[in-house]
Length: 118
Image 1 (cartoon, rainbow, N blue to C red):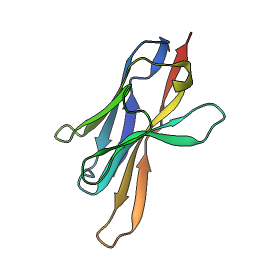
Image 2 (image 1 turned 180 degrees about the vertical axis):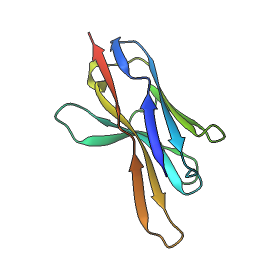
Image 3 (image 1 turned 90 degrees about the vertical axis):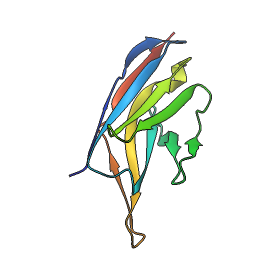
Image 4 (image 1 turned 60 degrees about the horizontal axis):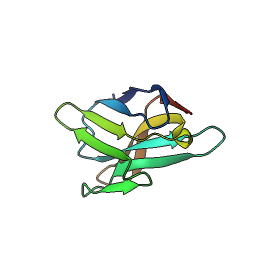
């Protein structure tokens, strides 16, 4: 059974840093692209950073944020630096998967709250 569990969220002042961790249960790294998403208050969920199938990084917050993964430990990380108030919201770890027939499916964690204050 696949399960994604995020941790590391919290409250921080603007300019601070947080590191989020996603622990993955299940052997999905070979068939899924991992990523982090943000759902800000009153807004739709958007990708922060994620991996393409070729290992390259995609997303909207390159520069201040860094995604990394440790496949051996089945963990995905999001290092967030120079946090801004607009970074506030619930951060989700997600796996975007496809099977050999091309069928797509995904898995989501429960989310971890990040609150950035002035």
